[in-house]
Amino acid sequence: MPKKAKNLHSIDAKKPAKGIYVLPNLFTSAGLFAGFYAIMQARLGHFEAACLAIYVAMVMDIVDGRLARLTNTMSEFGSEYDSLSDMVSFGVAPAMVAYEFALSGLGKVGSLVAFIYIACAALRLARFNVQKLDDKKYFIGMPSPGAAALVASVIWVCVDYGIVPNAVAIGLAVLVAWAALTMVSNIRFRSFKDVDFRDKMPFIGMIVLVLAIAIIYLDPPLAFLAIGIIYMGSGTLLYAVNKTRRWRAQQSSATDAAPDE
Image 1 (cartoon, helix red, strand yellow):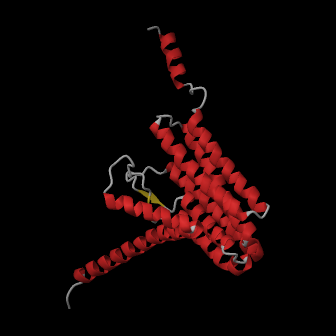
Image 2: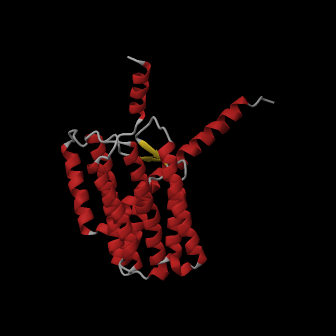
Image 3: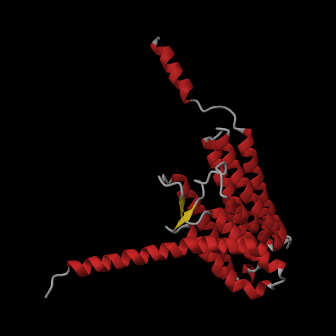
């Protein structure tokens, strides 16, 4: 092949493919709209609708990733678009919903807490994009959808039970700050990416699944809040236990290595 033809072939190979995959990015766009809708509903004072919109964004975020892998339509564009969508739906939206619901009553402190949450969500997403993890079973830091769901669950429970926002403003601020810090922490949280739903499960597992669905049906906001607290608390508790064990092991090693008098 002539040298000129080789150069043309190499140039063509470097050209980015025109167009984008429609199906996974359609679900990503739906998640982005859900985040935008949550912000708008919070500004109108419709907090239950805002919280539900955040949950819809979570479902769209799960579906678009699974769909891209199943249909082999993963792309760099889709990955970047998904991160930007997550920033709106799981960074800006929960912070604005929390601020409009109760944090605004705390003045500058409430504004600061909302900003810290948004900043930590951005840092969490940026770190996730550049991390190369060998163990796909765990996330490093609380995933932003999980943190957003926890914040939304608290607000949904308050609305459902008629709790006055001023009564929970300080507690909500602490929770939002805690969720923000766990996103940028080194705490490991299960990703459940290793779970294959095509595998068979024992009969008892199906019974547990049916009972879980029944409990969620009885009181959805309280059930989702309990799931969020258990998920975040389990990761934090396991991290603390491992840290304590390592500290005790270091102390024991230092004691054994010390010379006898």
